[in-house]
Amino acid sequence: MTAVSEFRDMTPDQLQDELAKLKKEQFNLRFQKATGQLENVARVQAVRRDIARVKTVLRQKAAQA
Image: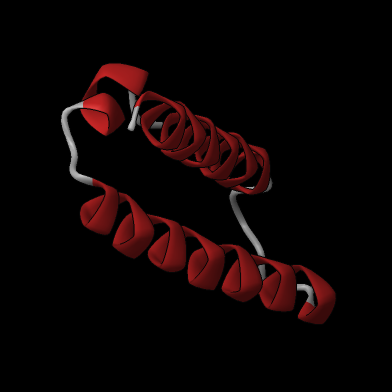
């Protein structure tokens, strides 16, 4: 889980890259869950929350501009 302050320090391009990385990780976790290979089930929720944090910061930065 990443702190919001770390996301606020990033540029919008960096945030978009981070969002893409998190969505890819979320996809991989869902795939592992479906095949029964997922060991850390708490990571699914942590990734979902990080995605929400990145989207929130992106919207805040867009509103400021």
